[in-house]
Length: 308
Image (cartoon, rainbow, N blue to C red; front, top):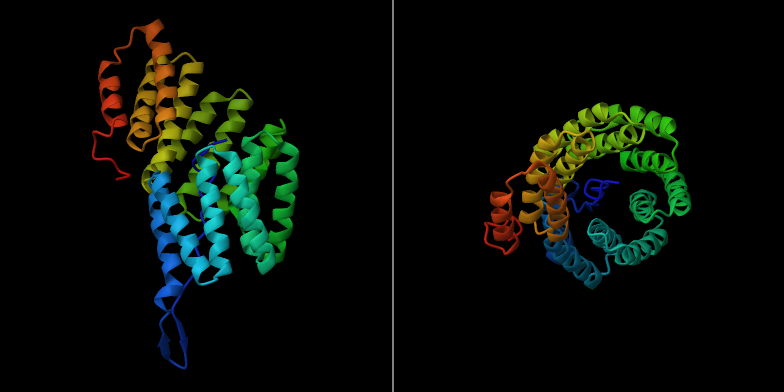
């Protein structure tokens, strides 16, 4: 499952100005401070700067805690868990998600529960715990009916679960029904759904159709400026090209993804892609000198880093 867009399920809390009898009522600074940190964290998250986003979500939690804003605390806990999930620190992610679950339960917040449980299921999917993922998604579905809401990430995770279970036809049907319902402005969700589609198609030996979906995902992520998503899409395309024997295209896409991973500080991912490139290099005689020069420079922090 795609770690980046799986899930851009970062939650915002509304702290709107209210009007009573025509008079504007301004929210006190101490009550809006946590939301300010959430917004900053979301901006860094969207750029793929997860450590920076984590700092702001932690600060948001502190400010919400000081003012005893339980709804804000739940949001910050969920968002912190989501950062740890995307960084593949699943134990930490589960810790924060489970505390967010307790808080949302106490509040009786059905919408919050839908988002939180969908995120929690993502961790189970990443860990291969499919039975727990299914049970969690079923709980999210109950909360979704209570809230009377649409939530595409829940359906997408359901399709991912069905794909992992080898139920490709059912997974494809879910996504075919889901795609037209997604807000056209929600480019990251559109991208994530196309990636989920591509995974079904690669699993059923339809690589050319999978490429079309990955190109659609790449276009959506580029529009949204979601760096991690762009890198993940390029990596997935490179993997298909490598598998189908088009080593030149594979190398091209790997080099593009490697640069992004290095620039956003995803060092381990960059090294993984370098290993793939060197595997191609040994058989095809590619010249990776310039790619390695840039990677070394950027991994050492000698760049106008987007996360600075």
